[in-house]
Amino acid sequence: MSWSKVAFGAAKCAKGVVEHETALKTALKGGITVVDTSANYMGGNSELLVGEGVDRWLASGEGKDKSLTVVSKFGYAAAGSKLPGVAHVAPGLSHSLHPDFYRHELSASTGRLGATEIGAYLVEHPEHHLALKLGLAGGENASATADGGGPPPPSQVQLDEARGSFYEEMTALFQAMEGQAERGMAYGVSSLGLSLPTWDPMHVSWEKLVECAEQAASRAGRDRHAFKIVQMPANLLEVTGLATAPAMQKAGLKVMACHPLRAATPEGKFELVDDALRGGLPTDYMDVCREVLHHFNLEIPEDREPTEEEEEIRQGCRFLQQLVQDMNAQLTTFTSLEHYEAELGGSITPMIADKFEALDDDSADLLQKFFDRYGKMVRYSCAQRVRDMATTGEGCPSGAHLLADSEPLQIYALRWLMGSPGVGCTVVEMEQPEKVAEGFAALRQD
Image (cartoon, rainbow, N blue to C red; front, side, top):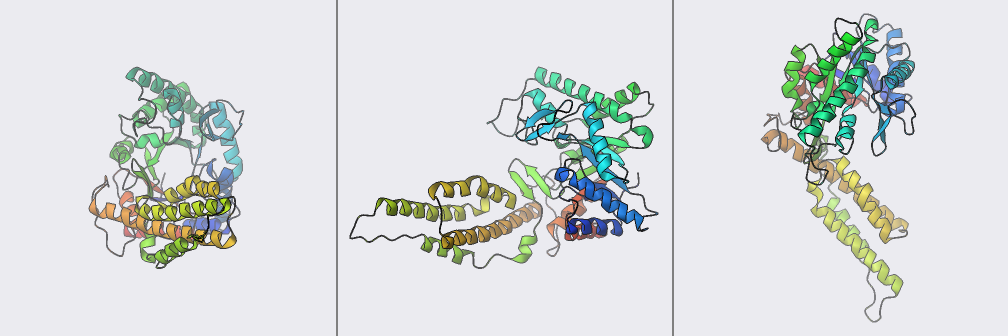
């Protein structure tokens, strides 16, 4: 397989969105030869976009002499699915490793991609089932080592039994996937567990997966297995998996690094992007804060007692004044804009709704103005924080990095990852033409 160093990541792309279609066309015309999608992305609309986009590109004649590999994935099931092996693995998530489920998903993916052939089909996040077997909270954050608030870590006996059962399940699935090898379709695994240390209960061993593939090929009557690809998170702040990448490559595996600009760490989730620094701080943030504090300063004449309604409103106003002051004090504690937006939607907005049945238009507009400016302040603060981590090495497992003042952090982060030993391809989410340009910029400087 001859691959470009960067793959077009279609996780946020959907059929019918002109911006997404333009981004894919730009990437293909620029020389990107790998497209990464999934049956799960955008409810299948990502595969539809990729299928139609690649087909149009090839039909135009531009890609006639170029090799293109489409990598798709499967594993997640629709809510309420009655397909074989479907298990509830986390709130709102269902997943299956059953061979019949694989066959169903492959047929569905093939239908959505149309004339575009699948070069490789990966099992997406199989570690959900390891979490279930261990009795841990399923999903992407199932590690029992994160803090002391979850279930106790499993015993070694429990761990051995769970892992043994998990790899047996993977072997049975791989045997079914070996059936497509005659058609030239490779297979592999996309797993967060590959990037976890070996002592973590949720660690997934690439060596064990190779053993599973060897057993599967033997059972299928094949001399060689078609297990060719491993995909795992890797970036400046998540480097554990990178230590194994050279060995994976030596064993004949293509290593795809995903989440190059989104890091999940014990301290929180970080975005390795610093565009906000070039936009500067919102100059009117403190003015908006003062405006909110003044607006919600309800004065009641001192010559009489407030009515019950007035007292209720005054308490609500005091709550909002205190909220603004508390948020201002906590501004630098967020790790990403996503972190703030989750707090806003999950905690702050419900608290306001609990205090007020309704807000007048002026009050609602002013609060919205404050939240908007606050979000911009958070973006700036997070960008400065993560750039400082990268340049000083404090809190950055990959060490201190020498960035030119003019070089965007995201370009450097992509360039660094592409140059990491053993990494064959880096999946960059490219739902906008600007993100395609960033991928090309990193390629030019690599």
